[in-house]
Length: 88
Image (cartoon, rainbow, N blue to C red; front, side, top):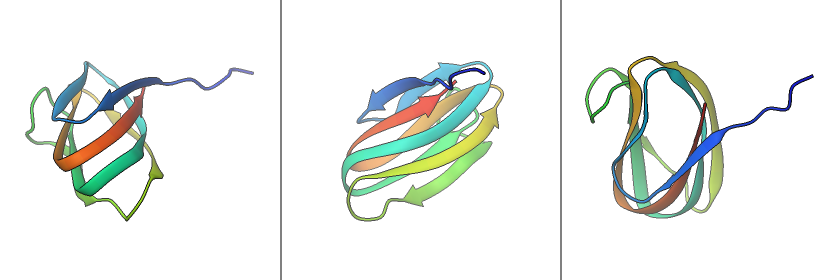
């Protein structure tokens, strides 16, 4: 059996996470102040959107996803936040 593994990117600003195809496995919200996120299957903040302006609940949390992307993975975030994107 294989041990699941992920690559991670800890971000606090809009970021191109990965170029090329992959899978976004989840988001770890370490801290935020009224934070939101949109994830694009692209190299910039454009369409197609994987996740469109998701607003976090209060406090830290883990958001499981498991969504494939083809072109790339771009995170567009608002307000103050410290998050970790898990992907392959």
